[in-house]
Amino acid sequence: MRGIAIFAILIALGAMYLTVGQWALIGGLMIIILGHEFGHWAVARAFGIPVPVFSIGFGSTPRIKLGTFWGTEFQITPWLFGGYVQINPNDEVFASHAAWKRASVLVAGVTMNAIMAVAFLAGAYVTIGKPTGNVIVSHVEAAAPAAQAGLRDGDLIVNVDGVRVQSMRETIDAVQKHSDGSSIHIDVKRGSETVSVAVTPQSGHIGVQLGESRVFERVGISEATTRGFSDTWFLTAQTAKGFGQMVGLVEKPKAAEGEASVHGIVGIVQIGGQAFENGMFSFIWLLAALNINLMFLNLLPLPLLDGGHLAYIGWEKLTGRKVSIEWQARVAGISLALLVALMLFGLYNDLMFPVGK
Image 1: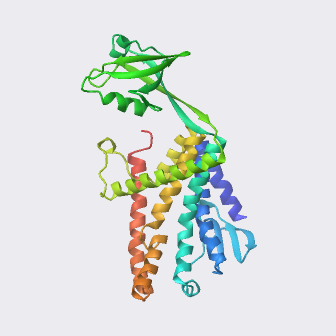
Image 2: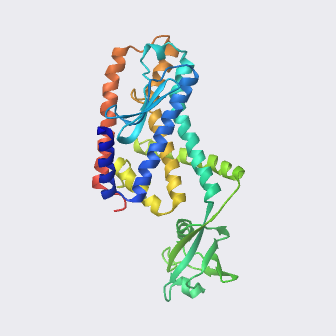
């Protein structure tokens, strides 16, 4: 009963302070984390490695027992910010298995994150469709280069210098390439006809305000799957670049200087709420990106993470000796301090650089 009461209190508090989009993001994070843990559990059970507990939510008390299945007790706790499977990499039973089996169990979690990213995106393309952007001239300033060239309010920009543009960012970048005063050739759709104009910008501007609209076109499973894989690869490359910028290995763009590079749970929930307001496709894209971010985070060679235990297995195979429990405990203490510091840094950014401010 105590567990149910805490559930009710947390839900009531959340209803007071969280938007529908923020609740959706919390639910999405739960699915992402539980999918990660399911990967560990499924591969461990396939190899006959015991998994005593699968918990939906953190902590062990208070808890609601859901039952025991396939040798694992499933439970739910009120602290719904993740979950875990009770596999101790230092346990003698786990350590008695071949190194490749142990490594497979550890890698299964991040593999599930990659699979979920592909599945989320492919599902979005099938059910919602692929987004096609339309850039609209919402206002033409009087006597500006655009007005002199014949652009009008409501024109739909199709091509700039013969290249299809589908976003305001692409259009602005194309215009600014002509800051030397050379003419820009713009094709616009005006009603049922296509009109071509030549505009000469002044100081990189042509004197228009742009708007953007999105339409979605559903695709078949084959194309959706292909797009899911290619987008996941794109997100992986972008996430790797982001981690590189965080540690100084990759130069950070000047336009991003001063922005918070790390967010805590508060900022992530706020970002999720905004993505939800921008439409379901944007929200699903964010969930796919969070899958990839969790994958990278777990592969960091820190002892409390999957990457740290993989590093220990690698050391064992290279040297023929296992890392002592005492040494693992010392390094784990340092690892915990680093993770707590990262969480506090993210919380600091959430408070000092609120999302959307």
